[in-house]
Length: 353
Image 1 (cartoon, rainbow, N blue to C red):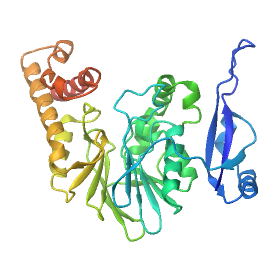
Image 2 (image 1 turned 90 degrees about the horizontal axis):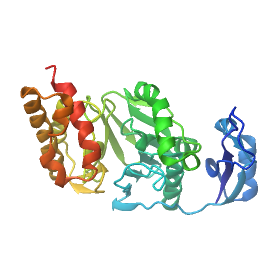
Image 3 (image 1 turned 60 degrees about the vertical axis):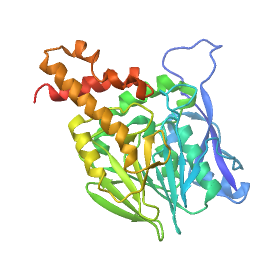
């Protein structure tokens, strides 16, 4: 098979640059134009070039044999493939590939869950799917709003996927799109991040919905504010595997961007689900359920207990952060980065009860 590619470059800024300044460019895959021959591929891309190319300086798209994906997926259950993202902060080396990503193959179509933190990651997910199935990619399900899960969405939509998210996701992405674009672009670097954009869902879930991949039902469940205000889980009924997104962390220090009390409540409710295994948003990639929830439940409990103690003792936020949940430091990676943020959110939530 042949795929369409184009070299995109940043448009020149209003400020004059030195003549020797190098252009910021990269080669981008254009899903949705695959064909059995180079001629047919080129005809398809010529007939309907992506509108977003107008935001960049771009060469004429060309077609070449489909390459292999540069990111790995493991089949953790029949027809369910998971990529384990790096347990790290986003940077130029990982190009936003720090979150777990999954896809599920039914008899008639494929669903992808989460898309990574850049367009580059999203295109590599597309290639990984195509190595294992030629069925249509019908759905991309975004587990929540954080940029390491959503910036790779556009190439999967170009491949034909309808994008699904929790009911609060469109507003949350609209509110944060500018800051996410700036921060991730700076951390990943202009070249690797080039072409990465936030897109809003085509469909939202406000309670429980089911989608059929052809003899394979996925149950999508919206949750109250917990890790974020936009959390959505996916249950693969065929394998009893729960894809939890960032409602569950493994190894990686949990990151609180919603409600501490809400997250603990949701964790309790998730224990009653009929899953036997779980794919967390970070770590894993496949763990026994509900046993896998124990470490995070302990951490969130300590976070709440210590925060309440600090507030009762009259500690200021600055002083409280230095004490809250320090007993958990040896149990998690990226603790010094994430725990102070969690303590800040928890303190702010609990101090006005």
